[in-house]
Image (tube, rainbow, N blue to C red; front, side):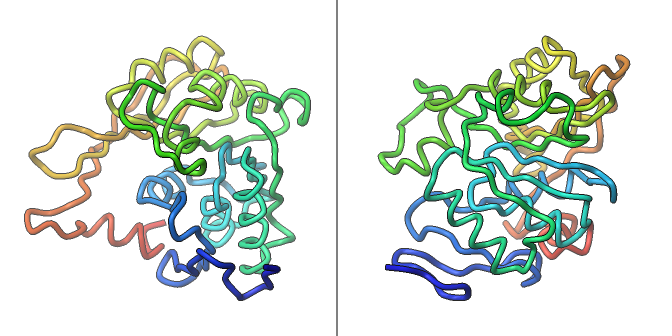
Length: 251
């Protein structure tokens, strides 16, 4: 069935982000945006003249949020899966951001063929956290590729960032806290120096579940460990900082 701007396709929902400022078509049963993407978009903090690329953009949520809040020079969303890239392109049109965002359907392992070196000042990525042996793999292709390293591994995403980033350009990543060493080691191998680290905890009493890292291409050694971000209070509700991020107020 052909879909039109403002209308959902079968098995889709139309959802709102940032307090309704961003509208998003999503698969009802496939990959759906999680809190991770909103936290990363806020953490990335692009500047007005940044040239931004989001590796593994999915439905295009991160480019849409960044364009809505910051309006950097331009944003590219790179997505491997054709169905999701097509939905991301529809989401760009839905939010009238065609002049600021381009969606490219391609493999992250092919960026050197598609983009010239040092073409971007900010690379953003929410790579799949789990190795193929790390838990049950979803039969849904959208979820499978988003969650498990079945199409590309961590080093592929970080290596792509190294090719794409200009000197002193920034990489912003959210990843599993349990693979923090894997991430920082991968970054350093390609000359991206970790500069800012913020751990994400579900509650005050829980271990970190996620980590957000900003690295700088050919940056000097020295890292800032920011105050942890705690998602839920004792009653199980979002804490004030998270509520402000979700609404777009804290950006």
